[in-house]
Length: 464
Image (cartoon, rainbow, N blue to C red; front, side):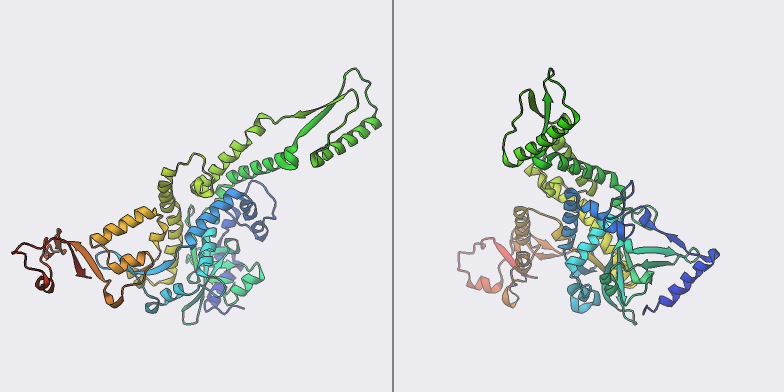
């Protein structure tokens, strides 16, 4: 039973289905892109030229590897609520300061952790280019839980006059029914977050399961051919022949000999026993054809094609053919920028729009930690931190935090280091620390009298 405050309005709109003149427009993306029904989702539907089922896709090692790599890279990065600062930059909003920051610090719902939640949403975005999140809310409009819904369970209904969208959510399993128990079967637009990519019609994302079905089917066909070829000891095929001057065998004798040779061949492959032929008969092994011999190259080429479909560097799938070590860092950066970040943005922006008010969005935004997404070599990262510490870009405590160290006691780590050969100015070009500045007064008193010579230049500590 729906306990939704908006259920009555949704029901009233759905009743117009009885009047064709007022019927909403039903747009079913599932016919063209992705998970059609529960049968298709489980991979038990008939094949054909339509979208590939998720079961068939996941049975291909290359597809499974690509989906796992992207979804895990998204899920392992924490999402934060951040506040924009005047003049640029942003800061993390603490859990005690905003309800959404508190939710991000806990769990999205009673069943999932944030890692599981974002991995599931990322899988939906990568495969179907559509992901749906239902909001379980109190009567006062407060969000209690965020519940991921499989794309194949949702159909959008649009009223042609008002443009209102309603989401028909099907409960396909008892678990889904338990998770969505407090929600109506038809949800209004303010109760659903729709994440999407590759939007063609303006409403639904065009699924990779549909767009890349030909590539996935070819990969599946090559894998099945390879399996058939190498089953039973590589299918070493033998041909037996009779000498031309011998009298042909009758039907009964021929069938009896064929049965005996088949059994002897199995015994040879299983136990290594030789086949003993009668005089006048000989056996010969048939070698692989040229196509069979090139199967390995065909397989490697198809792995690269699947990786291209999902925009994953082949070396991340342990496919190192043609990959040089010196190029890996560049490939990793391109992968992070061109593959992972777009998936993150497809999740961040709809969640931001569905969970924050327009007034809040002026100052607040949701973002996965970009520093963890950008994969930097440890040596390069250490050098960057070293330069930042030496030139005052980081405090000592900030430098320590990058390596997981605790702050120094009594605030002694909240200082910056500036080389005394530099002049430090503010945004108005006012000199804050002149180059070659004298040490502090207490330091000057303790300094030995060296005949009036200037003290040696060094590093000056400035309170942050």
